[in-house]
Image 1 (tube, one colour):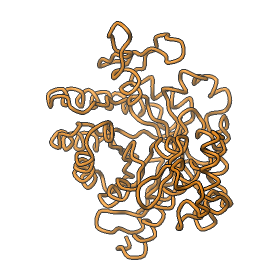
Image 2 (cartoon, rainbow, N blue to C red):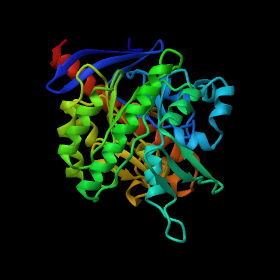
Image 3 (spheres, rainbow, N blue to C red):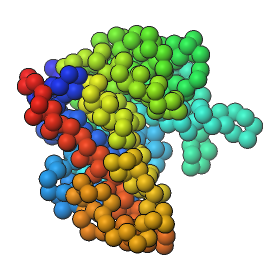
Length: 378
């Protein structure tokens, strides 16, 4: 029996409004999950995400965030986190935690980068990913089964398989080869997970791959849907391909995923692609973009994003956006935030990061309310 329960309350074409319950905790879908890569969301206190004083009294708390297996394995290490009582206690987070397996980091930090001699910082085979630590250059190795065990030591609620994230622009032959490796690894990880399913805290999601080749995506959906006991994800999106290709993959894969399971689109976190993905049947999203933009002085608006450092904001005493009720927008003007940015004060980046997260949280909540109000009740 699945440990994760997913209830769909209403649908509107492919879009769904639902509730996920896991380990005695719940979160509403569609949802945006802030990324706390290293057991922290950069420059924010985690309690803020659940406090109506900061996110707005008209919004529900944020109930699920991410952490990253690759980074936490390197420092402080899964053994230390386990000794601390698991990731929830280690970072003092009462909600749910999803951990990425490190497959994307092997691509973004290793396979796509090289040493001075021209050798990649990571290499992969059927049985492992070998990579050099970004901290001290020491070699490490992830195996498919090993990443499940590491995430189990974290006490993760939702764990991800160790996939192969393909870069854009490679041949269809290479897309297929890497996709098939993802499939074989996923089967091994599910066989391993089956032995410990009732003993560990979390559930495991497979990751659909296939690059921008839609026939490969279809093949990947069909293979991995058979393994998706609790939920399913789509990866390898927004890794450098053009916007039209991103939306092609979203539109093609979303409706083909199992209807009774939560559908997670990995690495998407902007006001354009999230609504498009929800309309095509996806439920869960994550991205480092909201906090990364905030740290660089950028904030979301209904016209994409703007830079607080622009000269036009120096004497602008209005709030960032009129339809946002977050702590930043209620209390501070563009002029003040412009001043903080020019003075390189950390507070400015923290306030912009909070706004950007809440902006996406409000966006998905508004879409959810529309589905519930105008969709078909299930």
